[in-house]
Length: 195
Image (tube, helix red, strand yellow):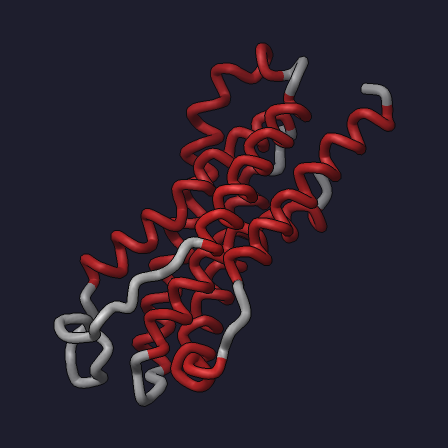
């Protein structure tokens, strides 16, 4: 798998975290650099490490998976992409900001941040299975996915604070479409190369 494909997968996976961080930033009145960076690091760590966990679980199945790895990659990315698109069109309940960490003077609710980071990174664990078929790419993928997520989570916090009330773009749907496209690319490459 080439580096461009890894970056595209990373961007697709980061869209969940991006959307969540926009939401976390929307009810804030002021942007706090260090606070936002710490939250982004948590999202990046979870999103970066989960593919490694998935890879570790799948490594024992590597020889068995070799015959249909392209179909597996297509299937996993398609399921995750459809799930993201489906979740993006579901109505979101309006949450009242009473006991959350939206006010600048309150400490960060790390339990909430870790729960959200874990929830948004479960898809990344399934994606780790894809890299079993591409020996030597898992460390690059793990680092890339983690850094790309860190960047998008931080950007999401910033955008949420500055422009959150005016944003009407469906970020999760864009991420789902990206993952569908990269899954189709992997399958088509394999079928066209006749491997």
